[in-house]
Amino acid sequence: MKKILVVDDNEPFRRMLGRMLEGAGYSVLTAGDGVAALALYRQQSVDLVLTDLIMPEKEGLETILELRRLAPDLKIIAMSGGGRVDADDYFPLAKAFGAARTLAKPFLAAELLATVAEVLAEPSSPRS
Image 1 (cartoon, helix red, strand yellow):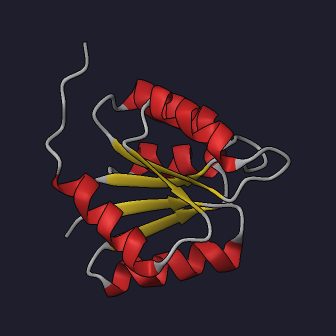
Image 2: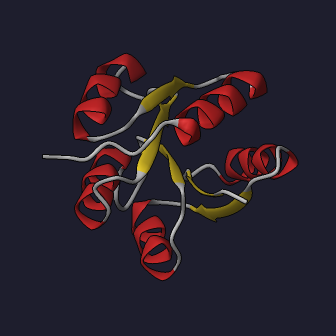
């Protein structure tokens, strides 16, 4: 069973994502921000991290960079609904920092599950 770490500061949204992923057969861990996510990641390995980009404490871009340092081949999907800046402004940075895919909130459950399955199916690529 593939294990996914869901990182989002919105608790109801985080719980909903967790339920959707568990319903699709994944094991799910959750964290409310990048600090908690990194602490969890150091304790348990995961196959994929699904992280919001705009969060308190440690935002998603910082979290992606730190995860890349810890695990260069870790699969990451970045998601955002924007905020003061349009989400599209963050997505190129998220990809440059190592996110395999991006999802703009709100998204459909089918879009989430298809993206997760696609990313998990991709072979890990060696980084130079």
